[in-house]
Length: 112
Image (cartoon, rainbow, N blue to C red; front, side, top):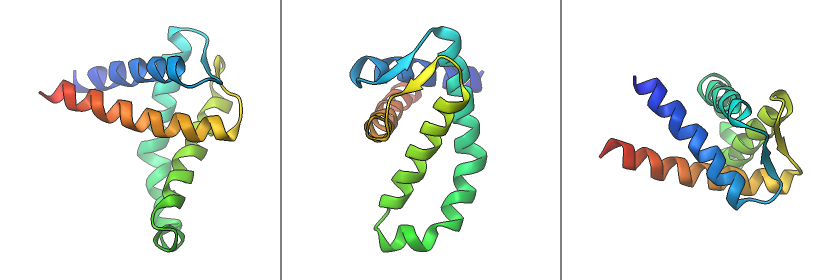
């Protein structure tokens, strides 16, 4: 049940970010659901490995490189999922920050 709630929060978050960030496009509910699943899998399995490998660079840049890892994973998900498009890398940066903030906020609301 918890995984379905988290998936619903992530899909809703993607729709909020689509509304707020120009250049961030979803073609429908199925593309949003698949995008949420792909982003979740990437954040669960790929991001920790990349963060361990790039830890020295992240320390030197005070964590900014960790943001680039998140942006790259989001942009990569847009390349894999049909119907999920991010126009350019700047849009991916803005969308990544917005996605993190909205997801955090909605997850906090769901806990209470």
